Image 1: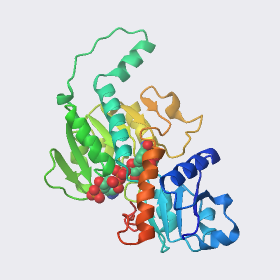
Image 2 (image 1 turned 90 degrees about the horizontal axis):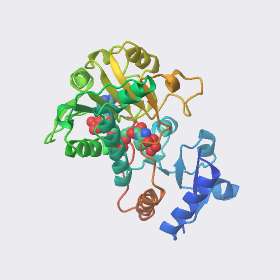
Image 3 (image 1 turned 90 degrees about the vertical axis):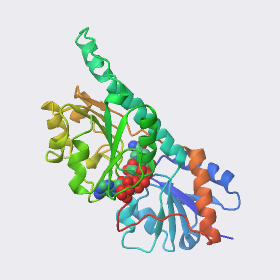
Length: 314
Ligand code: NDP
Ligand code: OXD
């Protein structure tokens, strides 16, 4: 019999309760509970936990913790907490999440490609100004980060006629589009992308990656979609690039500070669309199935789930 598995993190209590119920339905042989329902003796024996952006204090209250399953795909905060410990971390890899992200990427790429952002600006000025039609085949989308989400987005966008190029840490063979890799080739991908779609994880190497120096490689009036993490893009440098017309528009779902502060200039910038971190919300039902599979692997110990490389940071 394994000790109760706490579910906790910085999400509302109601959400925790929903997760607890869904996980208990998925895996009835395990007792999932919210952290505050565990006695102090039970906390001493906890080996496994399910978390959503937990605090360091919550994690420290579980001295025997060996493995954590996050219900989020991004792990930058957990990596910082776990890098000097023996705790293993599994992040959410869910085909449903990738499909949701690909749907959102397609939505916004079509929107930008058909100049809907410009027509919205025209409407505000009562300007009637048809623009020439541009087919997806005439537009190159540069995808930064070709992981679980980036690959799914690339295929969905390509199926829809867009030209794709991608950029990641390592070289790739046999892709149906051009791939670039490493710091030295970032300029090449930026230099041919009409729309840049950021799906990089936040690590020391990707923090501030899109800044006044690297953004200079962008084609004139390129549009940027940031669905990865806010700090990958320097906010002041992005605003400067938009103000100078070097970039035409930015669709931002992620920010340095979330929620975005009411006084933040992005809210009112005419060339920025603000989204409240909604491009790919976790589906509780599909994620709970994945958590249950990973938990079963951990309990049986025969085949382990994938662990995050804490040194690499993603
Ligand atoms: P993966 O870990 O599967 O993929 C990461 C990709 O980024 C890989 O291709 C990797 O390269 C590349 N990469 C990492 N570091 C570098 C670097 N320094 N230079 C170049 N490429 C790099 O992540 P996912 O696709 O699952 O998720 C990506 C991110 O999306 C998450 O970390 C999270 O921050 C964000 N996210 C946002 C959501 C939202 O709603 N806005 C929802 C879910 C996730 P390589 O392949 O060579 O290793
Ligand atoms: C995630 C996210 O990392 O929602 O899953 O950003």
